[in-house]
Image: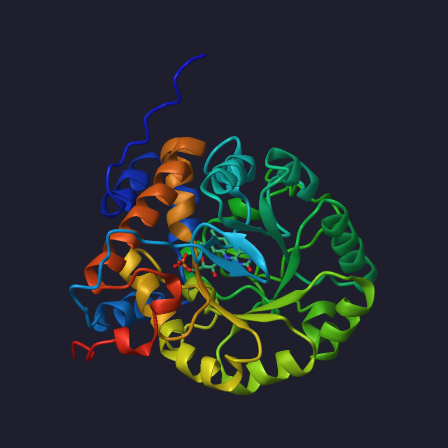
Length: 363
Ligand SMILES: Cc1cc2nc3c(=O)[nH]c(=O)nc-3n(C[C@H](O)[C@H](O)[C@H](O)COP(=O)(O)O)c2cc1C
């Protein structure tokens, strides 16, 4: 058997640059773009750069244990792969490569309604892997129900309801590139499956909002009436909404501003995490994504009360650079950097990470 192509990066810090050399221009715009002027996307990174860690020493860090549980399932580290649409744009194997690498790493993978591959194909790529299915509400609830039933049957362990996209955020950088949602980039889940409403490309016309934009909190009750799977709500940025999610039965909430792709005036997701943790942190698991690039970012979010952090764009970069082997390398570099950073802060187990690990902000 031929050796897998060597991924073209040796450190996490090389990855974005390596990907920029191989991803076709339009797909690059798609992954890199954020909402409007991209302030919230930049803010996500700035928020991490401001944070510092407060290390303890001489703590016998000869063994580091990264394992934890997510909704009672054991994982090798408090890290998951975010749901991201259309991974076939970045590698022909798309989500199948991601799912295999995530399984090999012993992590949780979450897969989008808008995946290039069907939920069933993704499941059979890594049958014994831990996976959650991300739901975009469909204009008719019966269509949403079909997706839920398929996910349940295919062995997804939870549903992730994304609530920050009643429509797709305005993305200036994508305005002139209609390609992404062309029919040739068909969705694996089937022809009837719809993405959130988007503005017509090229600056013509306005959004036409559809029925799913009318959803309110009762949609969580509706979802739970048709499934036995736990529901996680993704895209929460306030304590009020986190409490409502819990009141409507959510088993977890994900603090996220969608990688700065939706509301451009949103605060950095990290700056919203403490409020959500204060509001619900002892009732449900609180996950975090948006701007995580290095292991120290993960430690900051965990210290602020997150149960696990999601990797977004870096996974697509790694997929483009090296397919399955690229995602393998990303996940193993991230885990080893996490273990090293924990050792340097005197923390041996995930349970030892708490607010006392946070130092003063840099500015
Ligand atoms: C190309 C791309 C596609 C995405 N597709 C989805 C999606 O289908 N559903 C969803 O809930 N979030 C989606 N997201 C948002 C991610 O789940 C996650 O919130 C975000 O990427 C985290 O920010 P980061 O990539 O800067 O770390 C997408 C993000 C990107 C970059």
